[in-house]
Length: 532
Image: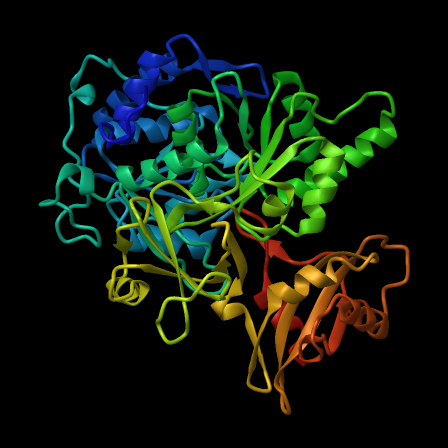
């Protein structure tokens, strides 16, 4: 049986699962490849030896910008075997983000896929990498060597080298920074977030405990493995012993076809994935009216990364004929709260679940005192899955309160049943005539209008009010006339929204601007567009 107290490094977890599930599949892809848990371990040992021959060792600072493939996970596990400090970079990032990350993380090696989806990553990184940085293309395969050689010796992770932003030379080996993840940086420079193997394992254990997956399940990873959710999910696989299908890009029709063929029982990634599968299922039933469900084996949709409207929960669950469990995490803490298959529909549609095992959540008022049950405040947390620090010490100093709780910047409340409800962001508050208004509260109600498909609510500069409330919508039927401001106001009043929160401006767009690995709405772009 898995004992998290005895396993503190990712490689120890890989070895444990390779012994416990020998011969059982771990990874599958859309091209028919299947690799077992023990074969993944053996291949990672060969790749670790290959990396060692290139000079990579404990404490080496290795960035990688690779798509979601079986070989990408194997490369990452091989680096974990050596005790390297890994900096995963989302494959969609380009010069601005990649250049900043390579410089701040002090990367010594960079793994690139060559050309992927029409873009030459090798050329970009060679242009951006500084002197002494070695760029390694894995377009023709990962480097491999004799696993009986020096590359497979037991290691003592050294963290970052002396003088770098994450010097851990004197730290205990389980407390060494071995991962540096970067936030999306859509509105400012990305923030480097330092994790250890132990913090990531704690997050993965929390996810595995909530989902209750068994070795007979088949999961899926169609989101960027370079996202913090990548190792979070793989650790859950190693803890519970279930396999997963990997896809290097999410295209709903292709994903559904592969999932049908491979018998996937759990799919998802984020709210955008739920909507995509909902739309794909409706088209599938129209095109193939006698074919049945889009993915017959599917029993669970799971994800996080963005709010899930209750209407989407109901529509997607009914259409796809499966349960939906939504969660809450962030780069600084990969797993904070998660719904479970045993929660009620009301709990699953209205909350992000209970805090996962090991996470202590506290809601704090603006004056720093602890809020009562059902009272809104900032979500703060402690736990073994919380990151160690930012690469920028100034950011770290402001991120924790006097008792060591991490300030998430999210607003929420804890219900009497222990479930967490997120109500918005501290920075996503509209201040109208001195009153704080949650954009998310209004968005949730605007989406219930029958003519609205999706909505984003923003605050815009206003000489009288300070900020005015603007709702930007997409239409459920693009050919139909959009709702008038008066009809939307009447709908929101009927839903109980107070007068002070009613939108004073209504804009209709063909689609909301989105970006980042989880396809979040880019509100900064909307504010810039409608500021005048």
